[in-house]
Length: 124
Image (cartoon, rainbow, N blue to C red; front, side, top):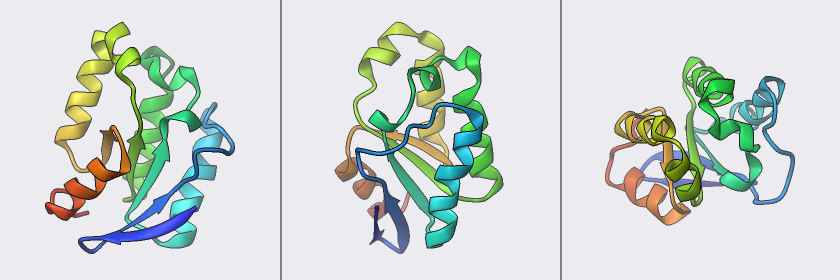
């Protein structure tokens, strides 16, 4: 993991390889990474998420988002989720609404996240 700062927002960028977020208990491991480094955002590659994260009925995405909101840490899911969105109208709506807010974002790559933060849309 490395920490970068874009427009005054510090971002912990997780490596593509490593433990997966599979259960609600795993949320704390990822949140701890952000809290230990005292960052504003955690950028988590899509490959570090279990398939269940994208099944909203399982509630893993919602529980993850809520925990990050409670601790005032932004969560950016980085990577291509087009196939997941194509398979679920509910997920498409969730992603669209999340990206309108300031707590959980879905970005295709780190450049898109950096641009959004540099545009000042990510002040926490």
